[in-house]
Length: 86
Image (tube, rainbow, N blue to C red):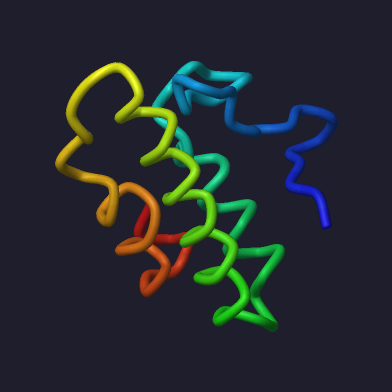
């Protein structure tokens, strides 16, 4: 599965965990909308995928200092809302 908008892919760049297109914290708003659409039939798999991404981000972001305080909100809390809320 890939996440795309047109031909523009909103993937993360490591180790900063910013969007490769818009440079916002990943998952950016576009990535969130795309992920919700992509995993629409499998919401539990979206949470598994994002949990794994969150733990990779935790490793990367703590390598240079303390962990950002908002990783759960950034990676998982929004998965309960529909794309119209974003």
